Image (cartoon, rainbow, N blue to C red; front, side, top):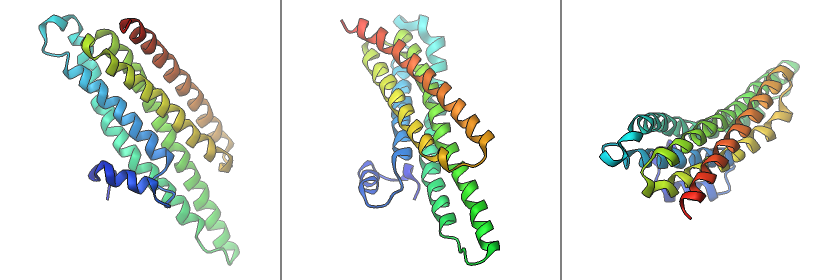
Length: 209
């Protein structure tokens, strides 16, 4: 069953079980999903209300972007668990002959790349989400400014969580060029998420005084 078909209670119970997947990667994507959903909410509380008309254009873009991210995060929740299962399948491949050992190594190498690429995409999506929180806070319905702030907090936390899942997989990757690309992308996305979350937090804190 895909995670979007589960109840919150069922997902939490699966997460809490002794199964290693879903784990932190899927949980990070879920936090990103919540951030994007909050940004959609702020947009929907702004659009169509005449007194916030000056923000309609920008909030329309926030709504469009957050809805896309909403769908992306759901897919990433599932892909993170699928990539882990793929790695475990490769790990259990036979290794009695040289040919089997070579096939197992190749399968594990590809699975390690997938297990790194998925949380990296989650991280980059979190950075996009954090960027949207700035506009949501500044141009959205002022009554929902705290919700935009929560979105920024979730987006940054999810970004850091996704980065942990990138980092834990990088040592298993022998393709140095791929590993460097992932590390560079990770550092940029982390910096972007932190920057946008800080900008949003500064605005929200001032608005809530």
